[in-house]
Each structure stands twice: as C-alpha cells, then as structure tokens.
Image (cartoon, rainbow, N blue to C red; front, side, top):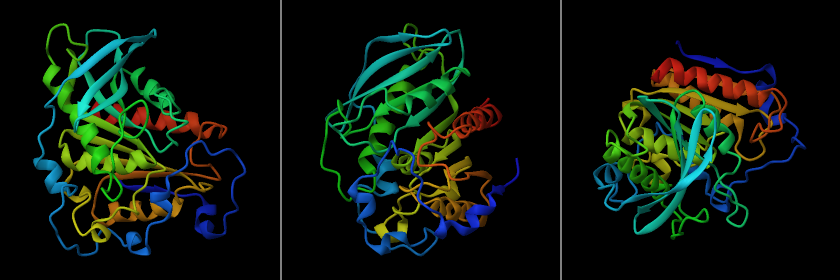
Length: 316
C-alpha cells in the first residue's frame, strides 16, 4: 500500500462548505470546543517536557491489569460471533463494555473499537459504534469495546486536562487483562492472537486510539474515523501526548467534508503530518458526509468495507 490522499474537489473549498442538515449523533463535549487556540499548534512543533502522569512516557511506565476482568454474561449469540458483557477494574473504577468473540477455533486477531463522545444521560453500552464493532467481528476478529470512564454505566472520575490519559488507561487495562487470559483454556480469550492487532476510533475515541497505538507496538493497523487529531498536541500540552513517528502502524483515515463537529481540515492536516513523517497511510474524504455516516447513503457501507479490507491486508 502506498501513501495516498483521496480528497474530493469540494474539500478544497472546506472553509466555504455549508452545514449539513442531517442529524448528528455524536457531539463533542465542551472540553473540545472551548480550548484555547494554542491547542491547535501542529504536533511537529518543539515541545517542552514536563512531569505529568498523563504524558506518553508516564503511561508507558504505568502498571496495568492489576485488578480483574469479569465476564458477566453472554449477551447475544450471532451466527458469526458471541457478544459478552464484561466489567473490569481500571484505576479503582469499574468499567463496563462488551467483547465480540468469533465462532470457531481461531486464532483470532484482536481489534479495539473506541466510541466517541455522547452525553452521559444518552449513552448506552450498545450505541452507534456497535454497528462497526459487529462488522469487524463478522470477519473473524475478536473486538474489544470498552465503555470508557464517565460513560455510564462505567464509573466516573475527574479528568479535565488529562489529554485523554484516563480513557487511555481504561483501554490499556482491558488489553492487559486479555493478554493475561490469552491461551488459557476455558477463557473467552483462549484463542486471542495478540501478535498483530488493530484499533478503531471515532471522534474522541480516535484521539484515544492515537495514544494507545503509541503505547502498544503490536498494533499494526489504526483506523481513525472523524477523529480528534489536532486539539490535543504535544506542543499545547507541554508533554508527549502521542508519537506516531516511532510506530510501525499503518493508518487509515476517514472523514466527511460536511462534519460540523470535528473539522475535516483537521484530518487533512493529520494526513499531511503522516506524509511528512513518511508513515504509511491512506485517507478517504466523503463529500458532504456528517460526523457519523449511519444515515449517509452509501458512505457507511463503503466505509465499513474499506475498514475490513484494511484489517485483512494489515493484520490478516
């Protein structure tokens, strides 16, 4: 796969795009919209390293998997996979979520699927991102889908200014529990293959996926879907938020040019940063598509097909 940037002609006029009237399912929290302009500084600007428990270096040194993962029950039996409801410990919090385990003997590669922001009083464990997790699982992947902290029924904790360090910790803990159980007879993760993994993140979840991919060398394929890539930067934080230049992962970026929540120009800029860093990637922009593609005609099926093809190519 060679680097390519697929941008429709209308993207060249992004600043003049009219708002899309279709319903926007995901809305970013105030912390995304009320940040100072300094947060928009490019990640390739020099950074001043300061001690922070949310820096990439601190997160890399942190111990994970110190509690337990609980398989609460088999939630749904599908022809291609079984969905299990799980809870697990993370920073003294109880985190909920689900995992999809394909039918068969495996081994099955692992993909982490990370939801975006939804107001707490509206969030449900099987929300919009379930469609994407299920589409990936049907192709023979174990899919881990945590409800990150502050998204009910997971516990909440103060996190303003943590640059998604808490969300990242929740993902890293889940992954460590899966590592501990991989190969264990009787575990739902008995046939998990962690040697080459993928990660998928929408919006806020895309920002978390960037952080996790910098911490987990086995992640070889990163899908960013209308992702927050420019608001949380090394230079605005004063510490390392993410470092894709030292990762061997291949990136696939998707964004609608009609997105009123996260600007498509942010993904354009991110693709330029990948190109500058000589990171293998491909970028797709969907004309007039909103923040999520669920009701966006053929965009959603096309997006899903591109994702599963990408994982088949990069992680098997």
